[in-house]
Length: 493
Image (cartoon, rainbow, N blue to C red; front, side, top):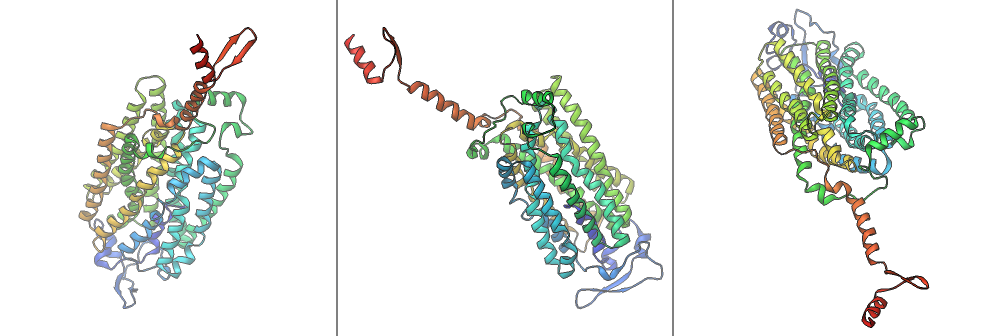
């Protein structure tokens, strides 16, 4: 909610573009109702209402004359430094636990959200600066989750549990219509206050209910604790071990999974971030309709994720497919099919029904990511899962700020079907390319360096055994003999 509230609210924050640029490409009736506007020398609009009132009840005295490029900066600013805290988020979770790191990441982001209305009225760059800080604070969130997952969830239940990560979809489904409703009724600033209050309330529940491991949980039954620990077996080291950085950075499976994650993220972020703007400009939908339309696919994504992950866990448990093949199937669905639906969306033209169907389908199938690349990082290395996801996030978060810049450059004063088609083609190419790479080279085998710390300790113990002085039995009992003494005895013999 705290990440995407701006995606929808920005539609009500920005003054309509001059008629030539603001005309809904596929809705001439709405175009005729738009206000006649010209620019002043101070980069604001002279607004002369047309004889026919515009359908939406909007106050124009609290809006900003931002063009598409400036809107792209505001939308992408969240991700500019988001990558910086990804890897530290994984490392901090290993040391201090997911409860502290994940909780504070959300809480700080919520507190900063209260300042957005004030900073926005001061200057666009003040808003951008605040969004950069929010992104930096929230960067620890996703990678820190994997450390807790590795300590709580047995492998044959992992896909189903990781579907809970897609609580982000529930957040999107609630946020878009919620922000639309409060923005159109009370003004756009209310959207940021409401989402921040909900973030603080969530943090209170998080502090009470969440614990980093089964051993720390005060209310878990002994039976459940025993089941979890037995199924995790020795894949998790309780003691903190040295991180095998060289092995991680040179690991082919890690890079291949990261490439697949990049492809899926570019396509999904394009759908999530840009769909409100697309349907507003191309199909002429008002703020409330756009809010409902943008939020609904994310409910489908959550539902799809849950049932697809149940099927994936069953395939693993029943040994119908190998773990690697299950992950490849999930990647084909969440990234490959997503790319196909995005491409079809680009070619849907001025057919709103087809556009809605393809947008919803492309968002929904992305739910299979819970059984795909997200779960695969835990498969590759349960001990360093949070580090792997942090490393991956540090790279993949680039989609978050590159994609809005690309969209802004392509559509600046040129909101046409053909330009948006290019936006969707680029997203589809990224999705399909990531899928192909993973299907050919991907694997889910636990990597040898997952036991890096444990292996070194074991080797040291073995070496100590080999270097201990030999013990011989004499008539006087046991006698420890050092190497020089043993060599002398052999010489005498």
